[in-house]
Each structure stands twice: as C-alpha cells, then as structure tokens.
Amino acid sequence: MSTRDLRSRRLSYDADTLVDNPAGEPFDLFDAWMSDATAGQDEGRPFEATSMTVSTVTQLADGTWQPQARVVLLKEYDEEGFVFYTNLESDKGRALAANPRVCLSFNWSELERQVRIDGVAHQVDRSQVNDYFSVRPRASQTGAWASHQSQPIGSREELEQAFSDAEERFAEQPVPVPPFWGGFRVVPQRIEFWQGRRSRLHDRIVFTRTDAGWDVTRLCP
Ligand SMILES: Cc1cc2nc3c(=O)[nH]c(=O)nc-3n(C[C@H](O)[C@H](O)[C@H](O)COP(=O)(O)O)c2cc1C
Image 1 (cartoon, rainbow, N blue to C red):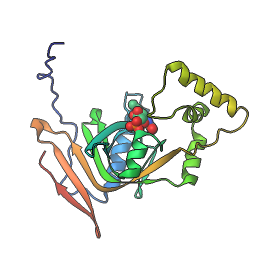
Image 2: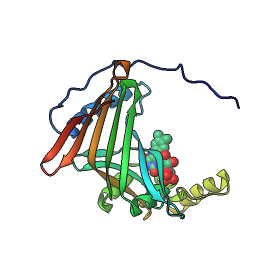
Image 3: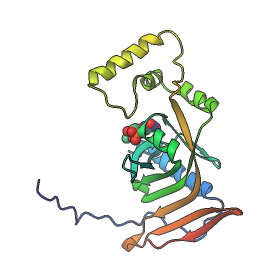
C-alpha cells in the first residue's frame, strides 16, 4: 500500500473555553461535561457519551512492560470513582489484578473535549455487581456466560453454540452472575480536562489529589 497522506486534514477548535480555576471539585466539572455529552446523545446526535478508553500496563513474559488500551462503557460515577463492568479473567481483568494503575480517557470530539483520569482500580463489591447485572438485558447476561473474554475461540459458530448452551442451561430461570464477571471502580489521583482552542492553544486544566483536597494547575497545550 502506498503512503496515505492525511497531513492536510485539520479542524480548528473554538467551541468553548476553560477558566484557570474552575469552581468546586473535578467531579463537578466532569459531571457538567458528561451532561453535555449525554444531552447530545439524547438529542439523537451520534455521541458515544459514555464510552472511554481504559489503558492498563501489563508485564510480559520477557519482563518488559506493555501498555494496552480498549474501549469500555462508563456505568456509574460519583466522588468515590468511575465504574465499569467486564470479565475479570479478560486481559484487562488480569492486568488490573497484577497492576491496578489505570488510565481512563474520554474523547468527546463533537464538544472538542477530552478528559483523562489517572487512578487506581479496585474491584466493585459483589452486591453492586449483582445489582447492575440484574438490569442488563437477558441476552447480555447470557452472553457473559458464553464468552471467555480475550481467549481464542475456533469459529463464530463455536461462540454462537456457547450462547445457545448458556440459554438452555438457564432456561426459565434468572441468569445468575458469572463468578468471573465483575466491575472496577477507578479512584482518581489526577483528572485532566482538555478543551480545544484556536491555533492549537488549547486549554488544559489538571486536578491533582492532595491530602487537603485537589490542586488545580494549567498546563501548556
Ligand atoms: C463502544 C464499546 C463499548 C464497549 N464496552 C465494553 C464494556 O463495557 N465492557 C467490556 O468488557 N468490554 C467492552 N467493550 C469491548 C472492549 O473494547 C474489549 O474488546 C474487551 O473488553 C476485551 O478487552 P481485553 O481483551 O483487553 O480485556 C466495548 C467496546 C466498544 C467499542
């Protein structure tokens, strides 16, 4: 394939601004930005308001460290942290068990905004996992049993057979929560808000957790 030249593709950003010292805690600003993103989604625009990239760092067999990133959906958040659900035996589940340091990033490109959250992941307790699993659509509950997430599988047919087997196994009863399925709460240490501005002079405001609360700093773009 010849080199694809994307160098002249560029947008100018001027949708909004960020003040030096936003009022309150970072959660207030995050909540305001999430509300803008979910409002866009509610209006039927093609927003992926709740999707975020989860980055982990895992040690390979040769001892070197490998970052790994994938998209998951944010399901809950409050001052305690940011919660997502997944298979605990997946690559990300194993990575977080060995090294709970994690980065979450949101790219709300329609709003010219990015949020990056550095923190530590803690497993969500089983009663909260049960609560969330119980409101998932039945097909998603069944799918959780059928998929050994991140493991190789021979074919699409094998996966669909595993789904049918799980449907049969739990026919006419509630689908229980698989023991290998759960959630992580990411407790933030640092939250960075990025707002695109003209001439690449973007606004970057970082909240860093201290014993007394949160420090606020502006960074060069
Ligand atoms: C929009 C979107 C939402 C996703 N949401 C989730 C999710 O909430 N939980 C999850 O485990 N995987 C989710 N995935 C799949 C993950 O990106 C990933 O493929 C899977 O979790 C396996 O990752 P791993 O092998 O690194 O553990 C989502 C993918 C996309 C594109």
